[in-house]
Each structure stands twice: as structure tokens, then as C-alpha cells.
Length: 99
Image (cartoon, rainbow, N blue to C red; front, side, top):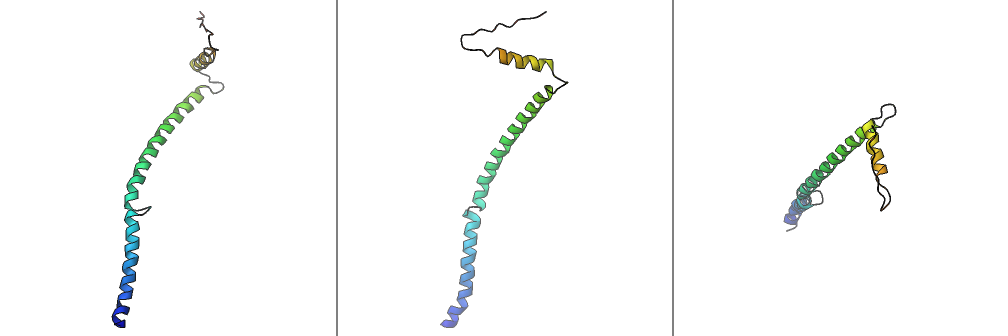
């Protein structure tokens, strides 16, 4: 009886260890099922990164138009109109056209 019990201890321990790691490989925090959720989150993050990158490129272009010595007249006009047309409430700004 002790010989049979001793012969079954090692396989039982190995089976328990295999079951433990197998369970966490599938249903664990970093298992196969969590991989799908992580990939979905990664897709959303990559989309946000692409939007932020596009926004940065647009801002860098606007900044390059305002660099000293190479100021774009259209950019200056756009910025000045934006500042001058935002007055106080009940205030009217009338743009003048210069010849």
C-alpha cells in the first residue's frame, strides 16, 4: 500500500502543477482569453494615436507658417480676425476692406 501511494505522489504533484498553470494560461490575468481584450484595447489606442499624430502634423504646419522671417500673410489675417472678432457681448465688429 505504501509503495502504491509513494508511486502516485509524483504524478499527482505534476498533475496539480500542470492544472494550475494550464488554468492560468487560459483564464488567467494574462491568459489566452485576456489576449483578445488586450488586442481590442490596443486597436483603440492605435486609432487614438493616429488621430493625435494627424493633429500634431496640422499644428506643426500652422507653426511653420508663423516662423520668424517667413510669416504667411493669410495666417496673420486668420489669427487677427479670430482675435478681433471675439469681442464682448453685444459688441459688433465690422470688418473693413482696404483697397
